[in-house]
Image (cartoon, rainbow, N blue to C red):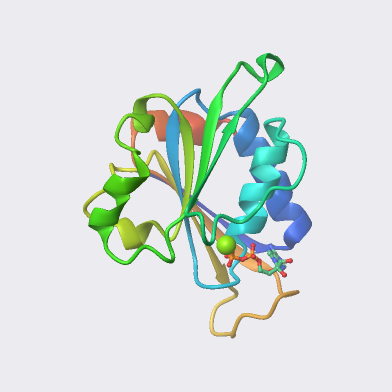
Length: 164
Ligand SMILES: Nc1ncnc2c1ncn2[C@@H]1O[C@H](COP(=O)(O)OP(=O)(O)O)[C@@H](O)[C@H]1O
Ligand SMILES: [Mg+2]
């Protein structure tokens, strides 16, 4: 398992990491975004999606649970899904989202993956955001970021961030 910690990243630095991971992302893959309320998961996802060519407002899928993006040919016609499972009542509800066939066809980012425990495949990468040790979270404070690869695909993906 490959792992890397980044200390004290401000919003701009996290956005740069997101851009780097977007650039090195495989055509299909699964990235879990972990961290409590307000940790910066959606902020990361926005920067990631923008770097892939998504234009216009990137809405947080708080109520819809899922936002699909079909990218233009200029971005290899890639399909990207952004999920937020915070409001999922039970992991079994994931079936209603019609995700089963998507895992082999899309690049998928999931906020609050723990709400889908047992019903989601192993992610290629997990990105965890937390406040600096011991302190409570406040919006402007820098974040601690841990990136972990769980599959060979994830390790490959992560290797692309070397030098960040
Ligand atoms: N790395 C960061 N450093 C400082 N503030 C951040 C960082 N990332 C996000 N924020 C701020 O934290 C707040 C919550 O971010 P958000 O992405 O909505 O969190 P989440 O999706 O995890 O609930 C926003 O006001 C955002 O500007
Ligand atoms: Mg969010």
